[in-house]
Image (cartoon, rainbow, N blue to C red):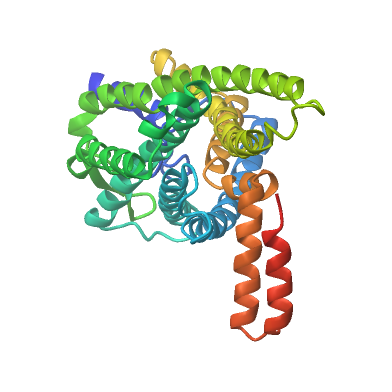
Length: 375
């Protein structure tokens, strides 16, 4: 009986922990959340709203996100932006975000449309990929935040630490760490048979309940507490340093010395544009992740409380949707606030039109020359 109770508690927290979401989806058929016994019409209406919201938002987020991340990969891997600051981190981030979104879609489709995750190897691959992609996503954000922090707050060390080689080494190192950390998902994942529906669904091996309880706490520290503290600290430092830079730049740009500082100001201005975009990406990431992490921590801390009402369930679902959206919104931030990203995207669009024969070469050269003249 004690093991069953602990499994229920773990499931309740896992429903908020994203890597386990693939294993234990909060669907009517296999939900491990225990609702209040007396559910009135208002409660059922709230539940139906949460279910409808999930069924609309998840496929929409996945399709938009996969397309946007794919375009981001093409742009940052292009000749124009390949050597730009943090491009390696941003390409890797877009790739792992797409891996997570594809796993999320398979999980949602299995629970809401048709039962497709019935084999044990497939369940293990989905669980492992989801664990790794969610871990790598947050640490790639930490990676380019650290790089921006060094470039802005410690500019004398930027040439030493902010290099393409170091970016690639960091990305590969984080990948190796994630491979080693989450290999346990292959032997803690199981396929459970639900007699009421006569179907098999991905679940956890009940014999590893105690182990997974510990893993949940470790994963929370690695993917939430430490990254959040690091990103918050570095973003605050970058914001203060950037504000001081703007004040100094305005002070020195008088008519008398404008020519002497023109080149240095231009380079600094380019750095600040990149910093502004990446600062916005990391800050938006924090904002969208915070509700889900608060819910997860609340569930982990109050392990003795198994029952939740429909309002709490709806709040959890909303926080999860916001978390999912953090994997698909980067393209829009790049397109709205990244001037170099916009320029490269326009180059790619014009090249695509020329390749498809939708424009003549003279017009293409005129438009690309105009793009090259942007500052």
